[in-house]
Image 1 (tube, rainbow, N blue to C red):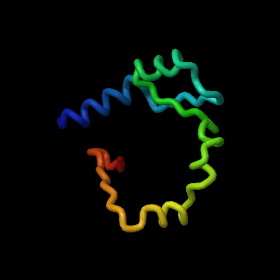
Image 2 (image 1 turned 120 degrees about the vertical axis):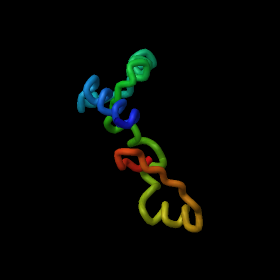
Image 3 (image 1 turned 90 degrees about the vertical axis):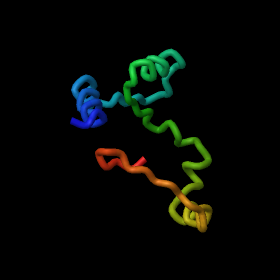
Image 4 (image 1 turned 45 degrees about the vertical axis):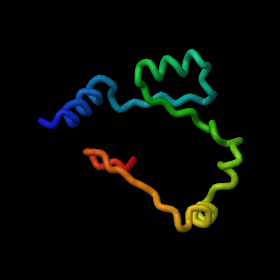
Length: 81
């Protein structure tokens, strides 16, 4: 078996499909716990005050990126990164 596929299956077995959802920004300690355990999490509404959240839309990005080259990589399971 491909070692990468084996590693991904083992990760899924150990971690399951659950992702922790936070409603507020985690403290530095909470953040480091997630990182240390390689645990995925989502902070809902974390970017709502960012200028980019208000400014970036399809038209803006299309204009900003016109003529630019973008590299795309596909993982062994077909995910684009």
